[in-house]
Image (cartoon, rainbow, N blue to C red):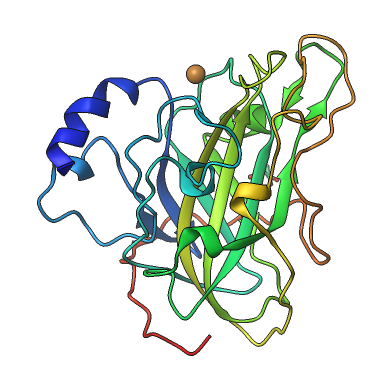
Length: 267
Ligand SMILES: *[C@@H]1O[C@H](CO)[C@@H](O)[C@H](O)[C@H]1NC(C)=O
Ligand SMILES: [Cu+2]
């Protein structure tokens, strides 16, 4: 389908849910992929974010083994990458997230090998670098990662592990809305992928799992009734060693950056 056709088919479904507007690294702001404008452009800006025809609707439509769970529906590899150093905290700045959509916030990395621009997403192996679930259960439905995102002016900090081996990585950032999750198949995952070129002198190469194997529909963190008191188990693989649960605040935006296209390196 042409971009224009996609835009007309899906524009009506994107209202009401958010997406990552921009990514801030050391005060430099990089534009995200904007479903409301990029599909209409002949020559959209070079960004690190992966495009998708839908960052708006509830997901998954076809279950957790569908490759659309990896970087959202019909995801297209990001054409650029954002340069970061191992240990940097990056700020993912969302548009408005709906208050009713309580749930965890999860961040994964996967090594792309030689190029995130051309990698086959179904081969990416994701390891978890950050997770925030039910923060305070003293009320029902509780105070969740998504509520912290809203309270923090729609900004989410995530720290790139200090000891990670340098290279090309996909950051997979995900919010899971659990308001309907007491019914199987009604949890809603909202994931977005962003290419990073990570520099540094670390050597850690954590093992990951395929995106299509991250979750099942009956995981206790996916099929769950948040309107009754609960102890919440965040879904997906365990955090890697060396992950930082709480990132350090980043500096204010002082400049605008442009994504780069990394030279192809040996894997
Ligand atoms: C939310 O803001 C607080 C206070 O600035 C900060 O310490 C915390 O790391 C932020 N949380 C996230 C996930 O960005
Ligand atoms: Cu919704």
